[in-house]
Image (tube, rainbow, N blue to C red; front, side, top):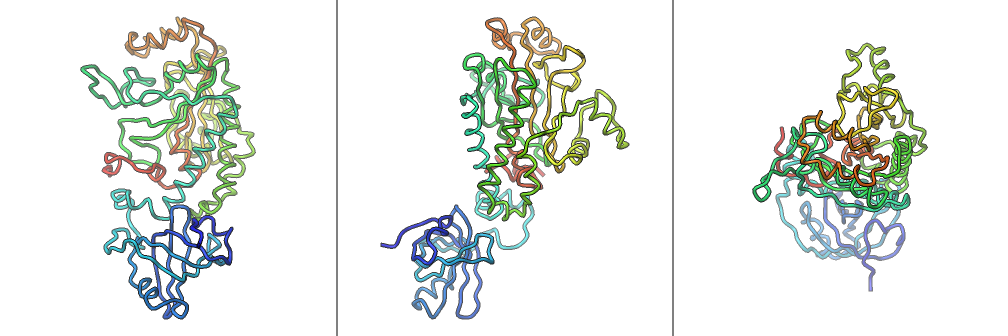
Length: 432
């Protein structure tokens, strides 16, 4: 019986007859030869149908196939050094399952709005295929890394009644006659987990009530947020560096084919795998921008052009450390050497992709944190449970958050962050 295999396993079956279930992405004819571009969810490659080597029925079936026709094919695997994949199949038999005309995404240039409106079908194309395969590698690498480091996965709620960073960007919902919000971060709940289990990470969807217009922002996105008891900021930076180096290394090891499909130069990513990220103070970053002639002063937050300029000075991610308290959230610990600063850091990705991580040492003192909550204008009652974490067995602790889609956008060198999420919700697709 002919073995049923996936396209990705072709290298193990050279010169063997195999069977596959595939979809047609494109085709062309050269007289007595049909060239079928095929996919099966694991890879893309070419099938060749020679008229003189198959029955008339098989050749006619190949000739009448429409884009996205589904079928079983039988044939022999051959090497193909000309393709990015490296193999092709010489087809001897075709069993058509579905073959309808009118597939809306043709093999021509389409605008991003059209493609996002048809995201349910665009996912089948080479570019989103490559992005999702790399996304999957990064997800697996995340779980592997934190398990090796002694963390456990800890799930934070999607509905929340208090906000880590204020309520101005939260989606308000009515929750059984009470006010609630869609989560903008799992951090506060992650801190509760850290006080119970030492080292945890949350990884799930989060929401911001902001339009998904630019390269950097999403209405819905995924956050990976570790929280670590008994840990100071410098130790947290060490973990962030090791994690990012590990994840990018896994992409280079496992996704060479997908990087080729995207036209992504892997050598641009290789320095990240070596670690040794520069730790640049906020003060020095401001001076760097001022020396470059930019209109910025101490106390200003960095915009995308500022982060882009800084990132261009380095061949790997860079930490920017100790921001002013006026531009960061209430839960951070103040720098003992300068109370106008928090002990915090952002990771800025190379090539102009901006912030991908943000973290800090958390304020562990009950009275200080209570005052910072009040100073932020937040309802103290909403945060009493959060204060309990300091009241009962509080310890020094730190954490950070990674914007998953932002990081994918940098690794894949994407033009728009919306490409990095499998299926943006309707509100994202409707943004101009």
